[in-house]
Image (cartoon, rainbow, N blue to C red):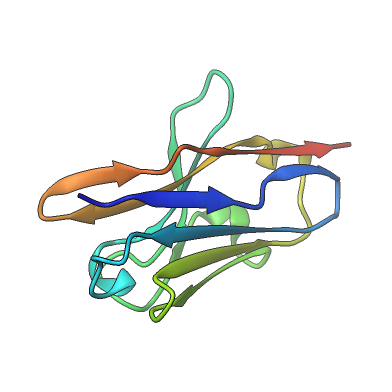
Length: 117
């Protein structure tokens, strides 16, 4: 069983920045071994991968956020961060922390990010 606790969402103007955090439960040996990352879901759209450590320490990014978002990890704190810069209204969504362990998917509760124009 894995618990993921997110924080850091909110309302920001276009061009602004936010940082999301996701802390995994202490039973995790390595955040890089559980495909830990961030997804988002906008109203009426499918959930999509934003950024994640998929299969190792090299991060993957959605094309739409490359150059603007940066994912990082602290394996001691079992926490991943998503630094979001140059935010756009189309980044508005609920952002979910995710991991996969022992063949099971785990999701955080979601945090709302709203970017006003």
